[in-house]
Image (cartoon, rainbow, N blue to C red):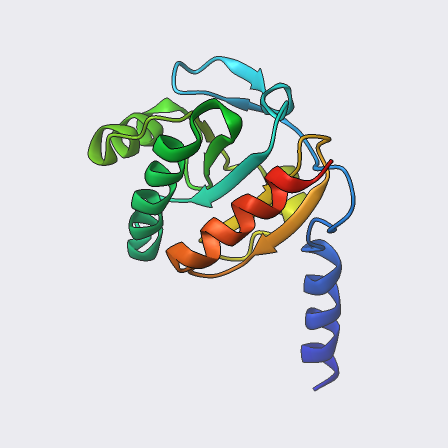
Length: 158
C-alpha cells in the first residue's frame, strides 16, 4: 500500500499539468519536414493546441470539429496539433495525409513537453488566448458545441 501511494505521489509530481492563467510552455519540436521549430512562435493569436496520436479513434472525430473551426474562423484562430507518438515526420505525414489536415503538426514524443502539459492520454486540447495565456484545458473528448464555446472564450479575451 505504501508503495502504491508513493508511486501515485511521484506520478502526480512528474505529470503536473499546464496551469490555467499561466503562459503556455513552448518547445522546439520537429515539424512535418523534420525541421526543428519553436512552436511558441505560432502562438501569436488565439490558439488551440491539440494533442493526439495516430491510433486514437476519438481524436480523429475531433479533427473534423477542428477543421470546421478552421474554416469558420480562418486566421483569427491558430490550430496546432502535436502527435505524441511521433519522433519524426513519418507519423506526422501519415496522419496529415489520412485526415487531410490543413494545420501544422509537430512530433511530440518529447518527455519535457509531455510533462509540462501533463499528457497522460489523448485527446487533450489546450485553449490559449492571444497573449499566450492558457485559458482552458480539456482532457477528454469534446462535443462540437463545447469546442465552439471554448474558441469564443479565447477570442473574447482582451
